[in-house]
Length: 242
Image (tube, rainbow, N blue to C red; front, top):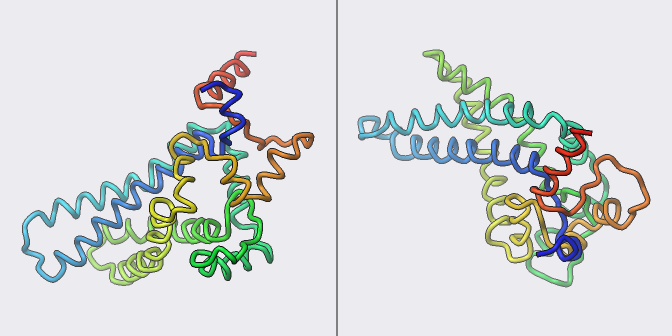
């Protein structure tokens, strides 16, 4: 596929650093969640069942990864710190359009007659998921460490467990939209290759598309050009040498 065809059909929605930070958080979190669910449902009623320690250590090791891997990604992606802060700002910037989106998204899932308002780089549901993760991440880390290192940590366990319950609808909703929902699962490629279909972006993230790709005359440090990672990395290398 030539550069021209990539530019006409695909849009680079997420740079390599954005994809890395996503997976550095998502994979350890899902392993933590699955191992904790196994411990609570399968082992807590019968602690003497075999391999309990295996799942306990899987939970602990994934918890360590949940702390360390995002830090490594940030430290190795210092050139994209501005982009990280841009994404955070977008997630916490809400408008009436976002409120309307949350109210109508359920109806839009069952009826094509319902039109959702234009969204930015992240839609309102993604923003909400982002905000919950950012708010609970420090508490997961602190309570997890306290549970591990102390013999009496009932309050920490209750907080830790409560946050897992809160995360459950967001986790399964996110997985459903990313893998099963026909209208949104096409965007999953954005978290592997970085590229998503241009028409999908124009439809689901119209405001962001207009700002970043139609308004080409506006200078913007965060503007992303739809080129493959290999080309992006090589151009970055050339600019560094210059």
